[in-house]
Amino acid sequence: MAIAAPPQPPAQAPEDGLIDDARNRQRHRRTAITTLLITILAGIAFLAGGGSGGGRHSNPPLSNDAWPNASLPHAISVSYPKGWHVFPPPDTPLTYPYDRLLITSYPTTTGGGSCSPRHAETALPANGVLIYLFEYKTPPNAILTPPQNAAFPPKPAAFTLPAHPSNYECWTVPSYMIRFRTAGRLFQTHIALGPHASASRRTQALRVLQSLHIQTLPTPPNQHK
Image 1: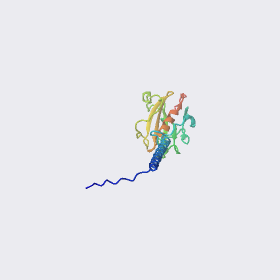
Image 2 (image 1 turned 120 degrees about the horizontal axis):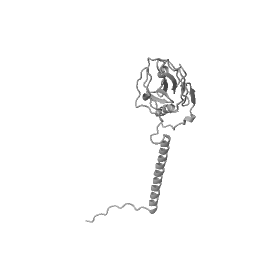
Image 3 (image 1 turned 120 degrees about the vertical axis):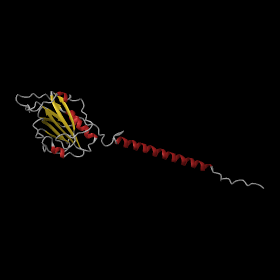
Image 4 (image 1 turned 180 degrees about the horizontal axis):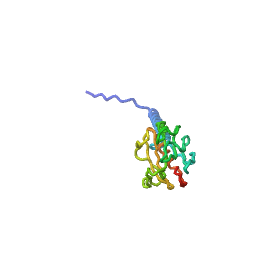
């Protein structure tokens, strides 16, 4: 018995093959163009986000030259970001040590506490910064013990915050405490940050401290403040 041959597909005309090749090339070109556009757009988005790890808080640094400068009593001056608020002493009812400076990134008032800027603490917003500076000098009476220079390292070339804030006496919010000496004078500063303070806020706070310019202050006879 003869075996029938399997059916053969219809022969393809030469022009049909050329059309298929052209269509394939067009699809490849469209795919390549789409991939290129996606890559370009992704690169633009990456740069807009500040590069690797840029995020919303990777703002370009602002030169301190663009910041206002405040000259305060007791031979102290400081630069601060535009829109921040500077309060010269007195900032608290303290009689010793001595108020020298209060700076906040938000509107507030001074006073309110017995030995801390209570009004400013209460008004501290989630992304706010509070900087309070006071100075130790010769105590006004023999009851108080003058601080030792060893507890006040020299003013650093670049300030850094301690690892964690602490709850200090008189304060109602946690703060970072830094002591330093400069121009023969002893200072202590407290930096309070809101619970959601951004990295840029922290950087601004440190740059404010770094901008402090403190001169030697001779003490007139029988005058301690």
